[in-house]
Length: 309
Image 1 (cartoon, rainbow, N blue to C red):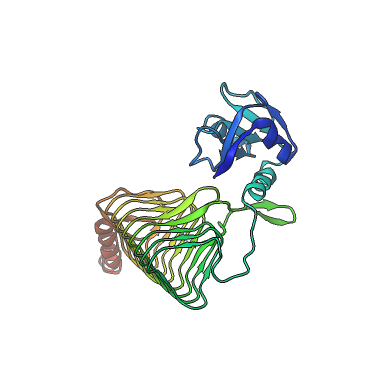
Image 2 (spheres, rainbow, N blue to C red):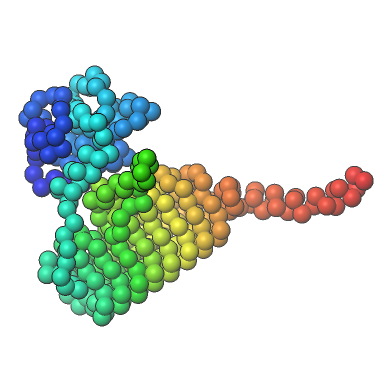
């Protein structure tokens, strides 16, 4: 998430009321999660296991809960609770904005786009031309939709990421300041849910078609011309490359990559990254030919036991 202008380190420290290490005029351009950070970004870290990863990441401002040596060319924001202060920054730069109309006055809607009754289009949404938005679709703030997109009834674009920190009194949610971006010629079925990114974009690539009742988690990037069948659940921060086919009731873990032109057969649990151009099946996931051989051998066990007796 980029800020509307470049801020100084001192200005950011004042917003969250914390100490800092570095030049008071050090440039701060935005904030992001560690997998998408770049120079000028703030990244937060609150566990010793990840200190080195954050300090050595592309981020140049580290929001951290321990006094450490500041890497050359970077700056530190010292906080007793980086998770809380990261949320403070999200609230400051992307506060919730209520809407008093079904279609916000700040929404931009392209020529020949049809929006059916009872749909909701939030603040600063952009919808391209020749789209069809069916009834009871909810499109949250800042969502971007390309041309020739069809979205069926009951689908929700832009709900919060499922991202929590356990506290003594319950779970504390990491606020979502990202977006959903739907490219041209995408089709989305009924009752789908696509969560916005925590700080970046959840993206559905050009020409991809999604069946009914599919969930896409925060910051996931789906490539071009993918097919995703019903009741599939895709976790956060997944990369699905171009022309992947995912059949029904597939589930994935977070942070993995599914390679180009891979085929994931129904009811598979994608527990790890898999390379493209192959067909996969089962839980844990394996190439389908190998998995089916194993199942065939399992069926022979009673016969083998009889022979052993």
